[in-house]
Length: 116
View 1 (tube, rainbow, N blue to C red):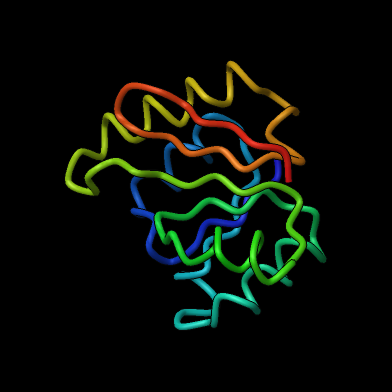
View 2: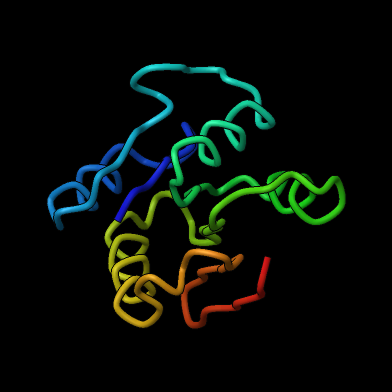
């Protein structure tokens, strides 16, 4: 799967996705401090799921009409990296390609899903 990981996502999570065979571009590696609107535009241009821990992206997508192929919001304490990785991989297993076209919120115990 194609991913764009926002710079607020832990590098260990990016490594975990890559290790699982995903194609991940990581903002922190090539465009640190890129603005949120530009991050969304990049995800859209490249057809990548946007992975973030920043709730502002939901506002940009739903209230300001910014288009994105899929938006995955992690709501897990960043210090709990192993749980974040496990829950993200569970979401991928459950939704698969269905992550595209959806806004998914991942927390410690559930997934919330909404069509974009």
